[in-house]
Image (cartoon, rainbow, N blue to C red; front, side, top):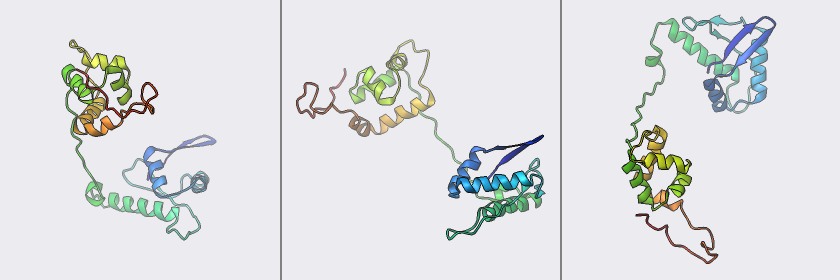
Length: 195
């Protein structure tokens, strides 16, 4: 958990980094806990030992009544900071001492005009309906499908097109005629195939 503090004359600013907010939520801590932590840090911003190699991060703790749910905020933060301090003091590579996950994410396929058109046709949809389904403008779908295409779909869109190709039944299931059909009559016909 990381909390960065910036000291200014007569003012203490707390920057809650994304990793801090995520850890705070995982620990199921509330606004009272956060206020208590900030008050503790504001009262004694220079308290605690500086952790070597961190550019001034300090091992700091706060007190909180122990609840039936387990360790206090101070216990959790203190244990984590002490563990990091010990690892760094020993000169150990944190990637070898802490749980570390490395992942690779496959690149989405490339889609030219013919491939985009093919994905759309596989669902039997017009450009405007296909655009509505994937959450883009009809003009963007048209641009992707032009022969002199100057703009290929962005990686997020290519990943979406990959999903449509691997799970067409799911994507088709999202397209239905309105209740009562187009003329107010009960209807359960599938979308027509666009040729």
